Amino acid sequence: MTSPLWEVFVRSRRGLAHTHVGSLRAPDAHMALRNARDVYTRRQEGTSIWVVPAAVVVASSPDEKDEFFDPAGDKPYRHPTFYEVPEGVEHL
Amino acid sequence: MTGTGAQQDRFQALVDADERIEPRDWMPDGYRRTLVRQIAQHAHSEIIGMQPEGGWITRAPSLRRKAILVAKVQDEAGHGLYLYSAAETLGADRAELLDALHTGRQKYSTIFNYPATSWADVAAIGWLVDGAAILNQVPLTRCSYGPYARAMTRICKEESFHQRQGFEAMNVLARGTDAQRQMAQDALGRWWWPALMMFGPSDANSPNSAQSMRWGIKRFSNDELRQRFVDATVPQAEFLGLQVPDPEMTWDGEHHRYGPIDWTEFEVVMRGDGPCNRQRMATRVRAHEEGAWVREAAAAYARKRAASAEAAA
Image (cartoon, rainbow over all chains, first blue to last red; front, side, top):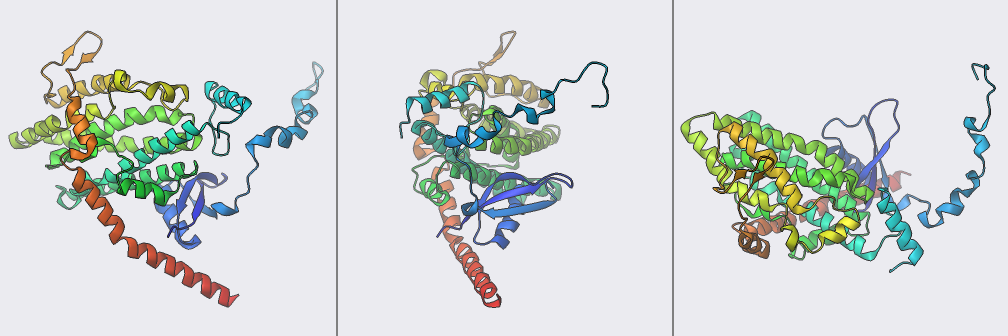
């Protein structure tokens, strides 16, 4: 009998995003949250925890990385450094 | 899965560029197998490592020492869990890894098969065993496999308190009564050589090291790390006024050179015939079996809550 796997995300302090810290096994969300507190925040590392069933995470595949991220590859004009700023012009 | 030449080239190029390999990347079978074995052995060591010191929790000499020891043993449980989590990203199953430990198919560090016979041993374990573990583990924070490296970063952060509390407790004993001083000296005598053995066989007898280095799993050789430990620890023993139990120890102007290690003892303990191998395994298996009702109750409770949530919906 194996409990499902949960991915754990911790917000280290207000103003920051939740960050993935690892996983754990627990029979349900309620217990996953409590276990996550004991396993991943023994030194006050967090102000908030998310637990997500590992089975519902949908991930892009590294094998198709090139095609998948290709569309952004030829659009350097999305970056400010693409543009030439004439000398002497400020606040731009 | 042997992988195409392109996959293999890409993998090795990432490793050589000091990039991290992540769970969904293609990786050679041997790399995956080596990592699962190493991470599992590391996780098992953490949870078996709770035993030698755990026995002293009820006998700690003060409330302060007791609170510290509880926190340290809890950390070791936590470290085991970080590492099982990392092993699962490689497709290993946690229940199967535990089963491999319980049936002796996977090993744990030989160091935990020695007994902690006095309070001073608890101090010596923190100082020497955790000290040696840190030297082994710090390079692993830059290991090529991302989830393992990240788990090691957390572990190393937490581990430094383990070593310091051990040295502090040792220092208190070394500056105490004659009897306390003798306890400290005896503990150093018992733990010194087993701690040196924690770095594994000497380079000449470590056949897998070269491959692990090519894969970016290992960064320094066993003998290199062992020497680093000796150089760091001998001056600490001198500060404590204690004798390292090595009559051949000399200073060559650069390093503290240690005498020959008794590798026969290492092999005996590895084979399962150390002072506590059977006891450690029996305790571990019993804890797992006697905890079965807790796991069953947790699952039953989860089912009950799910059912009542469904009924309410």
